[in-house]
Image 1 (tube, rainbow, N blue to C red):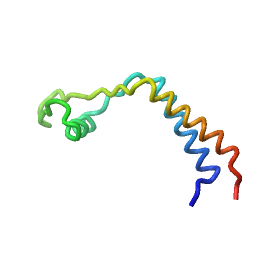
Image 2 (cartoon, rainbow, N blue to C red):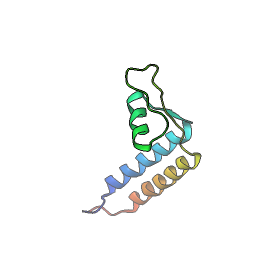
Image 3 (spheres, rainbow, N blue to C red):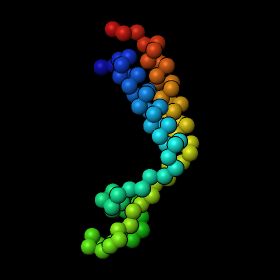
Image 4 (cartoon, helix red, strand yellow):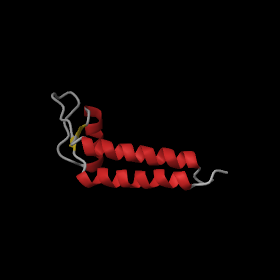
Length: 87
């Protein structure tokens, strides 16, 4: 099963707009549940018990080059989808 024109176009546009999102936003703040999950998987820092307040929220700051890389790959896939023959 190969990639059709529509799937390639969708993948390209999603990657492009995800890259735009990473370029616009400087950092993401995770909620308590996600912060505990990341801390448990990566072993990052001290875990607090669920009954303790306030819960620490992890801030994720993606590198600046990630947005440009996703935008580039998305643009290439989008243009490539225009040249793929249907059928």
